[in-house]
Every structure is written in C-alpha cells, then in structure tokens.
Image (cartoon, rainbow, N blue to C red; front, side, top):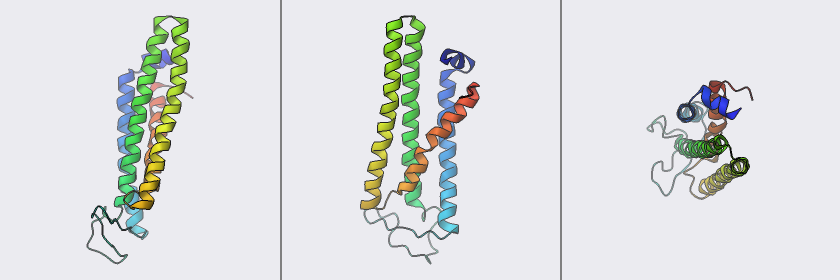
Length: 171
C-alpha cells in the first residue's frame, strides 16, 4: 500500500508539496490573524524586551497593519516551522521504512515498522516541547502568542491531508 502510493507520486514531490502547502497555509494565517487583530480590535500586547511594539494603545493609528498582530505572526511562524520539521521527520522515517521493506528482509521490515511508530512519538514530543516553550514565552515576554503557535502547528495536518489527496489515498 505504501509502495503503491509512493509509486503514484514521487516521495520528493510529496514532501515539496507538503512544505509548500504549509507555507501557503501559514501565510494565509498571518493575513487572517492580522485582519482579526485590526478589524475586530483585539488589544495589542506590550513587548518589553524586544522593542518591536512598545506600549501600544487601542487608539494608536501610527502602527502598520501587521505590527499590531506581531506576537500572533511570530507564533504562526514558529508553529509552521515546527510543522515543516515534522514533515521532514516523517519523510525520513517513511523513506527508511520503504527502503527496509523493499529489501525483502522480514526482520528488517519489522524493525523499520517499529522505528516508524516511534517516529510518531518523536514528532509528538517535538510539538509538545514547542507548545510548552511558547507558553512560557507568551507568559514571560508577550513576544509570542500561544494561539498563533497552535494555529501554526495545525498546519501539519492540513499539509498531510493535501499530500494524501494528491497521492490518491483515501484514508
């Protein structure tokens, strides 16, 4: 089943497609977040240590469209970066599994399947660590919006779904 899907569409093309979908989705989230921050009047936050936005008020009109949403944008960039790292981790694990499965050795295939399952745990651990770190940064500095990181991390399932549809998979 895996080999059939890899034969339908080159695995490198799938990886490139997933990364491109991640970047496009992240850009959409940046623009949408900026609109929400500006149109719906979400209060901007103070960024004390980085100096990008300092003590903004709701009636401050001299700031750019994206500057008001800067913590959200930084969060989306961090989350989307983690999603790209997870895509690369998935690609490496699948490539190792496919090469072991095509070798024909049953013992190597079982070991590769175990490593593939463990790589899922590693991807989960990377996500958990980034979310915890972003939570601490959000509370301590206000430079990162945790909601932006969550939206950025959710780019990964969108990219995974698009690659499954491109390869002709149904599940």
